Amino acid sequence: MPQLPKYTLFGSGNPEIEASIQPVLGLRGWSLLSMKEKEIARQQLENSGWLEEYSSEILRTITHMNHKYLRVLPGKHLHGIVPKNDYHGYGNESERTKAALNDFQHILINERSESMVYYMLSYFASLYINNTYYQWAKQAKSATERQKNLNDAFEKFDRLANCINHIFEQFSVNLTLTRNGFVPRQDDKITEQIYLPTLKILSDPKWKNVSGDLEDMFLAFRDKNYPETITAAHRSMQRFLQILVGKEGKNAKGEVGKLFSKAKADGLIPVNRFTEPIISVIQGYIVSERATKSTAKPMTTDVESTDALLMMNVVMVFLQHCLQNST
Image 1 (tube, rainbow, N blue to C red):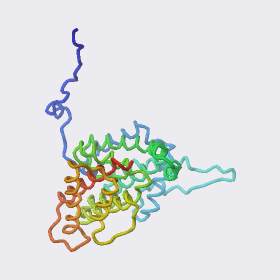
Image 2 (tube, rainbow, N blue to C red):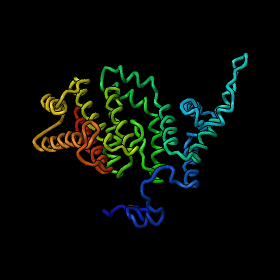
Image 3 (tube, rainbow, N blue to C red):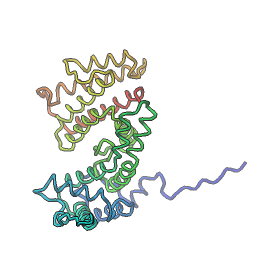
Image 4 (spheres, rainbow, N blue to C red):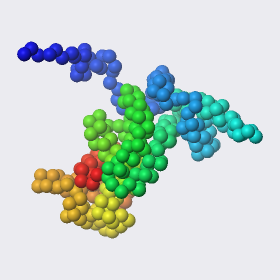
């Protein structure tokens, strides 16, 4: 029987040809993009349906930023329009929404502080999390019901995150948007196979405090505060184990070791004769790094970005492994 032909796109799987079409760039911050690149990114957001004149999310985003950063006043167009309502209940929200859109796009392209841009996108994305479904997920009686409500809660957010992440990937921006907020972009396999699926599971309200610790970890790394990155990484693992064994809130000496042992004894962490030595080494490494390189204790050695990045990756691998039994 003759084989069916299989069509192959030109250059498929050939990095040299692909690089000749679109050169590979090193990771960089948003501020290092050219004006032309930022305009392409802005147009892509508009083409994908996220920049609309009637977007209440954009109005809420710029309103929030003007309130939070009034002295800097990111949204000058919006700030120049006094909110009004007449006797019939009609106001000028439409005019204000258009002004907010102008501000949003201006910040995206012209703002010198990339932290401001990231904050704006982060807040904007958060408005697409459906709080009703999220609260229902908190109250769910079964894992199936909880997961369904979580998927519904993040349905629009996930679509926006996919759009932003595609743009960031194309322009080699050094962040990835997840259900836990922005995290450092790494090798695509690490991001896709470890970070994204693990943080998706941790979006469950059950792990809310763990997600908060991880957010502190990512923010510390972004701010180049590497000792605090290690501190937050250790805290997130400790909090995870506390919730796992039902003892959140304790912080006694040697707590992580005791929690880890109890989790294994209770069958809450999947271990066998092949994986147990590896997981034990990971647990020991995390505790050791906290003792020598974190802000929790006097540091005995300098902390480099590579130390903090390795710590983050080890913690994420550890959490992913443990979550196999707890979802």
